Length: 567
Image (cartoon, rainbow, N blue to C red; front, side, top):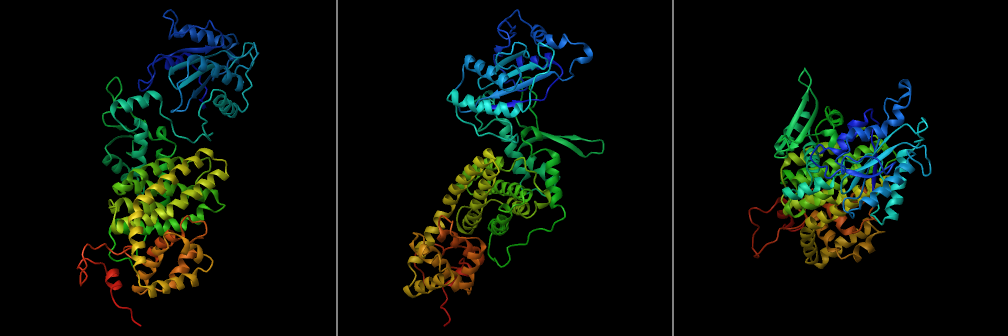
């Protein structure tokens, strides 16, 4: 259950008209009172004789009783209370009990206080109510509302327990707008996978991921099939923007627009411009040097893996502003991967990006100047085009996911250590989806690589085993006990035949990050060796027929793998 205290207003009649009206998007159905300070309070929703004016006069009577010079300018208090979207539909009696508890907890109408403020609770949807009150008590004094938002949150947690509702993780005011039940029903009726503003938020994230400047951002929004309306200054510069889905119209057949800041805090134009300013004067990322024969999507993912690996240290540092910036960058990389991923992993990547978006927002202000390398990497991913699920593209995707999973796990711990419950929960969900995407992408190349390792001659296997024991003495026994042990052995064989120093490679791979906490040391070593050895693919291409010579399409690495070793 989520409470939200809105800004105080100066016109009671205006808020009453909104609560009993159709709503901005025709979402208000059957508006009516469920509770009020007085059981005889007029209800314009159910009583045809009652009017908005009558309700306003009843609520405003203590305000009007004061001398005009003593009346507060902002005397209209407004609280909305929303239930979890997947919870049961509460009755009017349930909502009435909740309303009484909320006005008591916030100091508007404490229990047993006959001189409290006047209030009314209006319900116009299944999943929430609005409470309107006037901030002058019957005795002419002001109510005591100290820490009202925190007390409202605490009372909602108690309501969840008492009514057997799903517990909602407490937030910090940085969450995006949640869809109402009416918006969800509209999406179902139109066959959309989500309500309009959630779809638009995803479109904005995708357009922003790695965008080099404002012009590219708006161009990519338009290419996503989104209607864009800019608010222009006389100079022609954009002051703001709003977006709408094509075909999404209100009762007057007008487009239903959402400003960037209405979708979530981050997509507002001023915040977007800060991201662009942070990377405006920086040189581009270098190409994947030494990785000849890589496709553009694979090369972009190799670069991203290298940059993301170095970002892990920043995320685990004590500098909260830097870590917050790195989280935003990781979110952009996930959005870039979600747009360009292969069919086998795209759905999981989209879910990971959607969940992690919540983990990018907290009360900690990001150091904008720290947003650079990963934003450039996201730009390369988007502009390199879609990746296929096999071959070097699949291997490179597995490589970058192998780095991003621990990055998201670190984000989970970082938020949890700072009491950011919603963000930690969202990051955990993102990690689960990333692991699923990794399994969908990495299973085939790892299976082929393990099979290749088992087919190695005994002498070669023993040589690589000795290398691992020398380079990783504290991990060699655990590594050999893993079911995927044959994969790093095969990777070392490929690197050896390609002329790489395998002992030095292993030492460098181990030095990148500690390996003890890895779920699978062998899989982690495979991708680190794959990246460090500049191999274009982690395993030989499968051949249906044994041939006496290599086909013309065999990569340089595999040609070298077939050459006899120089003794």
